[in-house]
Image (cartoon, rainbow, N blue to C red; front, side, top):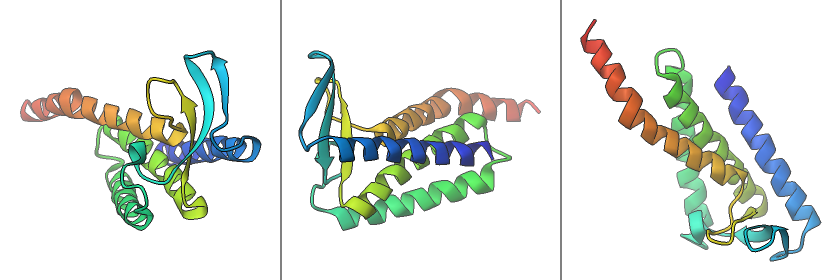
Length: 154
């Protein structure tokens, strides 16, 4: 239940922030929060991460949809038997993936607005996916070996 709530919360937060930017800013408008460090900059991303596969919306949508379905099924089927860190990581990836998928389906692009000037502009869903992937790496490198080792000691 926690993981479902987390996914829904991430989707709502992502869509709300994108709506605020989309309705209150002009494309490419930038508002400094901390001059030359952090700006709110409205850009439209017609591709995947860093505009890779720009113009390939149908491909991105299909791949995203398949990946999200697989992740959601895995979370649902393994929620009682898998380590919390794996389920949390996958929930973050799913929530962010769904947030960006909704934008692609409704708008035809993803609204990006968090601009640290040294990195491409991104959004809440992107943060969720990246943190989820980071936790997934942590799970694979730290938790999983310890879980398997403890299984052998039983």
